Amino acid sequence: MDRFAEILSGPHLDLLIVGTRVTLYMAVLSYLLAFVMGNVLAAARVSPIPVLQRAAMAYVSVFRNTPLIVLAFLFWYGGGRAGWPFGRLTTAIIVLGLYTGAYIAESLRSGINAVPPGQAEAARAIGLPFTGVVGTIVLPQAIRTVIPPLGNLWIANLKNSSVFLVIGIDELTRAGRRIGHALADYTSAFIVVALIYLALVYGSAQLIKLIERRLEIAR
Amino acid sequence: MSTVIVEELGPRGLRRARIATVLSLVALAAFVGWLLWRLAAQGQFEGRLWAQFVDFESQWPQFLLSGLWGTVRAAVGAMVIAAVLGLFLALGRLSPTTPVRVVCGVVIDVFRGPPVLLMIFFAYYALPQILPSGLAGAISREPLYALVIGLAAYNTAVLAEIYRAGILSLDRGQSEAAYSVGMTRGLAMRQVILPQALRRMIPAIVAQLATLTKDTALGYIITVSDDLMGRGRRTVQGSPINDLQTWFVVAVIYFILVWALTRLARRLEVQQRQKLGAGAMAVTGEAELDMLEEGAAEASRAEG
Image (tube, rainbow over all chains, first blue to last red; front, side, top):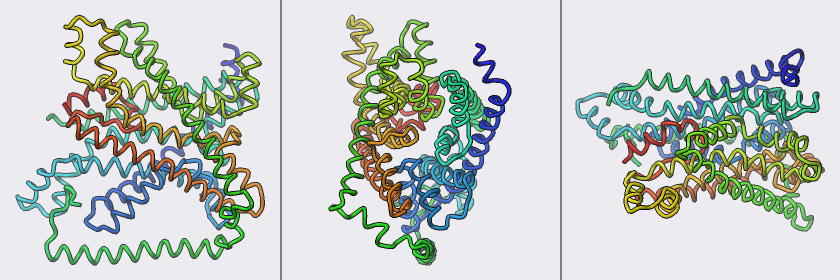
């Protein structure tokens, strides 16, 4: 117990606080980028334009089937040799956003496709224009079905941010390693870090459930 | 392919679609062209930077590719351990004995909550401080063990949830019928439920294997040297300075491996759906599992 008191005081506590803050900062910004990417890609996937469908499909496939750490190296070290203009943290946020964006695109697409075709047909039959079909009939239903997967992706995104300690980001997992090294007690340090992650994940899950319940419609 | 939103296009729509096709082709070509031009301007296409990867005399391609064996070994090792332990954890999670159920539930949540990288770090840094020196030495000498242990710990919890979802997705009538002919709980589980449930889970398990294979790349951080990433590190450290080329080649190898697994999972899932109808498992990977608490029960209700 002394050990935990030691971790939760003085410079070690500062490391944990900064680490948590950096992790959350990365998670939020990269998720915003991912959300924008996901929308653009999903729109391309459901568009009637084959070129855009193919391009979005290729993007999703590449980013989903390549390890995140390899992507980080490709952009940070590889790009670093070829004029990549961004710093560490910005690079981390961009790479994580591009990665999670591919997953968000898939969730959004399946959400849109899960709306029964009869809904859109009925909307067209009563004469709604394209924007009306999409904006008032399809999307409101699709959004409800994609809230849980989008929430899960927020959590996955938060957890994946740990990978970027490899390009020198001082996030939560790295803080744990530094504290463990300083105290020569990795076990206690990682237990504390794990508890912080669990709190973040659990808190997120509760929040997502709340949003889900708010948006629920009686069927 | 028609989607929900877009109906069959009329003459005007077709014309618009054609214009959009041309415009997006131009935009895409411009982007790719600009990217290639930038890379070329930085000298990234010079032959000497790429020569290593096709020069089979120099052994570099073989050296890099043989790392694939280390990656596959780590992935298969972790998967086998996780598949066995995960099953026990899932059965414990579904146990009628409250303490067993609660403990297994907590274990699953605790192992699945933090990032997999933290599990790998725990195995690499913390375990040697806890374990007797013989085992500790083994991990310190061979970080691959730590990688396998970390991946196995995390994936045991993930697979336990997949198993549980599969078991819960079965119609209640199956277990009721088994009990009514006098089978005990254990016998019904072994003879009736698991054989059906396991078959339903195969697509999800293969999909998780793809995720796990991607995660083996994290071994780089704990200095695993005999896998693809370790070989990549050695290539980068040599001359010429070809970070971009090396990680590109490594990325392509990983992509092929993981893409093949993903595709296999997808195909198995489609087969499964055709065979089972609407009741097929829709769990395709860990991302979908994160809030399974109500999910499994809901899914079987909604889809059944």
